[in-house]
Length: 378
Image (cartoon, rainbow, N blue to C red; front, side):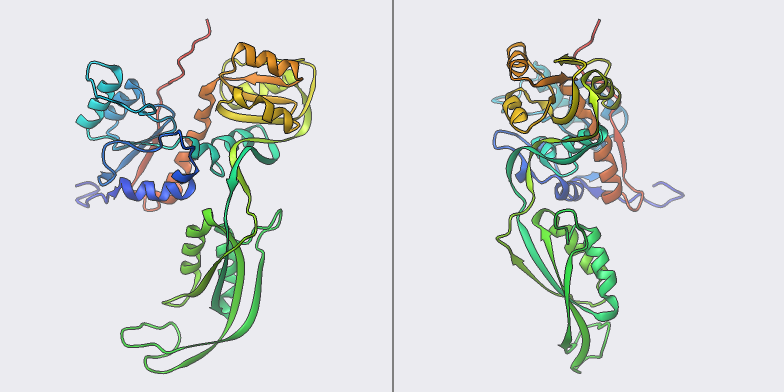
């Protein structure tokens, strides 16, 4: 019992993850990836969540010390399938410790890379990269047409609500809808609690038919906003699948800087914004840079895609000697700030969970303070 005898309400890990996957659904992950539940149960109550890049032994110790119930990590703990859980191995001891202390681990990896607002978008935003698009396209976001019938005096509020939830975006335009005036009819039956009318009597109401376009990835949020903004007990609406092409989705980002800068100055900005002490760089440091490609994590196999995109520099981690030489030969500058820069997404994950899962203030979300960067520069 806390707070003067009032028991603190607990939500389940399943409820948290269900909300999280509206932003970063598992189907966005690459087939070779291992995302989702790693260890533990999603049917457990949760009061404290810890966000981390990696699940190392030191991170688990931190979680135990801070009474964490759920760890949400970017890098999967169980990336390679285990054939046995050997408690004499580092991985086995971590699994044992997690189970012993009832800590659930969930991973969002390439799905969080691909997701709108995920790892690569955070990196692009920190560098003020505009007009972004995926570096490697993996598909299109399916589109749905939503048609909803609403009383005339509630149409403007409903339109604003569904637009703010993600409906009605066409190119650089938002709040794109079409409406028609008409008359709706209904008869409240026994047990109904109508906003307008009375049981057993047919009502005729002046309504607006509001139509708009919705990305499939935003549909759940839009429908929730629609129901909250609509005055009726039962909302009349239709959904139509569309053949129109939605926005491209994929890993990495390519876009333009607001102003040209030298490669040297861009390296300084990368170090500052990604909070790293050093970065490896290849190319003419005095070369002017306007268009950049970036990819969180290991991106060396995408140097040709970066070059084809028109980028003058590719920012990614884990560049090897020969691949960097290949990039240099094709005239593509490279900045390698390390794989660990993906940590920049952790505050965004916390912000999302605080906004979507902690509206009553009962859930605590923290970011791991353990530095999981394995390299030190001496």
